[in-house]
Image 1 (tube, rainbow, N blue to C red):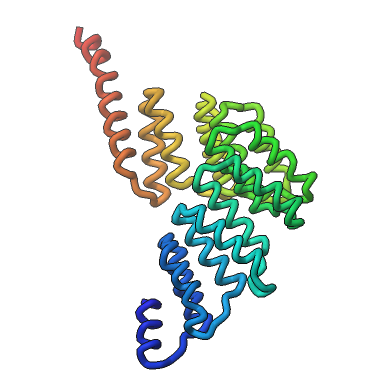
Image 2: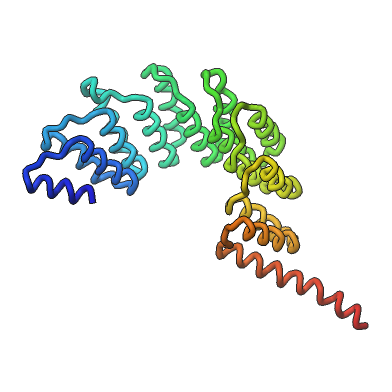
Length: 292
């Protein structure tokens, strides 16, 4: 709609202003439309408008989400060589990190993180390190992810909810239950309030590490903290119970899920059906023995 509005403005001889351009770029960002975002950026002189750091950042974000690392790097180079009005800021550099993460280029990401600290003299912030942690976790580089997390204090950074969520998730993927417990305790001791994301990561780690009882107990802990388990929580634990053929637990969790005003997804409906069939099969031998 915004693009059409700009086209109509142009036909009527009304020059678009920066807020109109920003709205178009936001739309490109949501749709990961890198081509249209760059076209909009290039069209600014046509409307007698000058690009700013903000407009570049918005276009870069669309390119990053569109998976076009090359375009992100080209736009960064333009900003580096441009006027003070388009100089890169921390948002710019974090967008570059995000582009590398989305492209699964964790080594390039870490190299750019060092470039931020050294050549650019713009120290990474919490968002920067979180992006690096997630990238390394997703690519199986767990030791590096742990080092990045543990080094946040030395950088003068305080872990936030995303930091704890990602590193606990990394513990689960690497099946490091001891570390997961330690990080979770650190999150509890921090000024940060525990949220559903952190709990879900811990539930996932418990399941991955074979700590079934703890996974179930974490749902109780969530409620005692005033948090409501969401569909991710229930899906993780119900899937675990299905694999363990703990049919009573599956049906109990399904009832808890519906009591929480959540809807069973198609996979969960299948698990409930398996649980009912499993309980029925289990009860049949008992009936035969009773009849004998």
